[in-house]
Image (cartoon, rainbow, N blue to C red):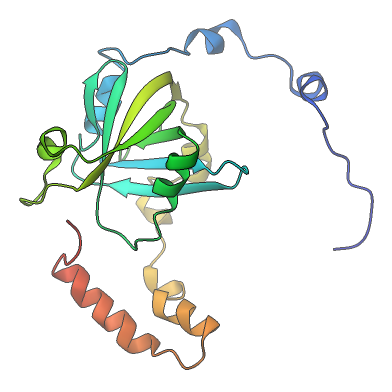
Length: 210
């Protein structure tokens, strides 16, 4: 990048001078709990993005997906997000242990509006509580119990700009490097073809899904 002076915004006063203030309508949509309308986005969503942060500010966002309604609404101020088997890096879990603040973005296929929920999470292992989160006969061993602090819908502009739900814009997976090829880019001796083949077979068997 050519060396030059880059103009930056240094504080919120400058930011507000640049952007202006949100409208009263936008401010009014912020709520501290779910209601009968907003909880429908939770009940119908098969996909949610979970944002966490370590105490040093390092952030992480992970996708979570299951049959619609997999995030359980226990009451208007409490959600339960099951933790399914993964790669055991446990980034989100480790972050929550040190910093309970989380953000959730609920996504429904074909729908541009999303629901954003912010709150505080704890990690639970209560078998009775997690029993209703079973899928394919498997009860999750862990879950995030989330105390809701902020709820609001987010408009469709990003999805419309991206044309995210337009099938004509879908990208064929073969046009991008495979997971095995990415591993091989870091280790030339890695057997990418075997890895990709075995991974596809595991997915076809749904091995490790639950």
